[in-house]
Length: 184
Figure 1 (cartoon, helix red, strand yellow):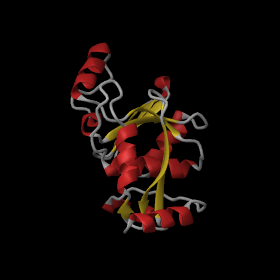
Figure 2 (figure 1 turned 180 degrees about the vertical axis):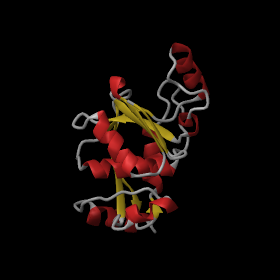
Figure 3 (figure 1 turned 45 degrees about the horizontal axis):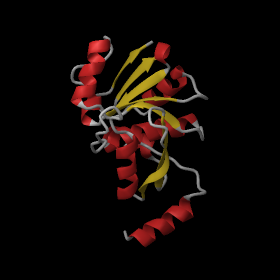
Figure 4 (figure 1 turned 45 degrees about the vertical axis):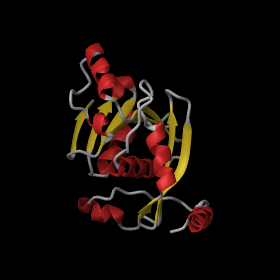
């Protein structure tokens, strides 16, 4: 697809409703009717940056949009970024779509460098030594208009990764690891 064609498609689809779904084989039923585009809306509460992008069109990830996602999900403490796992982005977008909201997610943590992860581990007990954040495979997200329980249930409905509920800290962890859940 050329850049011009991609721009044309973006303009044509901008006003349509967006359906996002994980790209996992075990989510085949969930994928039915998923639509031709996927969108991600994120606000990075740590840097003040916002993103509202169509990152997938007709079976193809959009390179420039993926680069923007990698940047906004970076380790802001070290200003380091890596390629964020597309499966995690798909899970977050699918859960957002199920919640039927226009508001962007507030991203609390995306990629974490080893240095940042170790610093956070030294300050508290809730940070895993081998966190999937280290591989760009996890995100901690919240929405002002939805409760932690609502976001948690939407992410669980994707049946496509790990979902952690952190009610006292007001966020939900989503990752593309094994299907599992935890938290209160």
